[in-house]
Length: 325
Image (cartoon, rainbow, N blue to C red; front, side):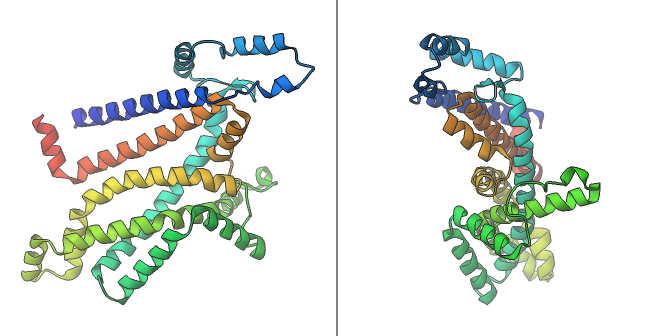
């Protein structure tokens, strides 16, 4: 098992390195930089701008700048923010925790709904309940994530049932611990619902297809011929047999939810990586942009690594193949 895990960790490491190189290359080669707008200010001398560019190594070759950035990553800084005059890592950590909280909550809720719903649909394949679920997921698939988020915001504004943005109320610090949890839950409801609705159709369809394929497998037909009850066949034999593609889908769903959460955070004013990255892109604060992409890649790699570990646990073929190497 250790060899398998080390190999998957190596893949994740090289993925992060590759993404960092490409992000650094594309970001730094884009036209303009943070100090370009300062040229329009007659109170700032050209010598001052040249000194600032030299201070932040913007006048150095690309390879030297990347090496300097890697050195800052090794020291836990992940570059330096021009706009905030601060290392990037502390700025990103606070917002990354908020994004992670939102993404993990949406992942748990989406799978808690998709798994039983997909199994239930596969069990009634071709009948009216299955067709209703298929039509419902098809409708959700064609609705853009932005439209879902805006629709939920309109609902919040019209009804007043939920906060229309942010992560906490103004008097959050004065609340008791239980009321703080309630306040956070109320603010999380709309972003989580938007994320769940955006990813639920894909999850339900994949669960339905995986379980439906297994239900027609020869070993299940033979077990059914021996008089094993349908519920036992479904949950003890069919679902574990369908776990392989579903575990692989789990890692993909984390990446999909993470990318979707960046848009939802901007629309619903959730203080995560999304609004911070948008602000950095508009300000051309390149090291914040690179750090944000790096954090997102780490989250994605961690999700895929978790899926690989679960796949190793549920699939004996992988364990046998890993042991034979």
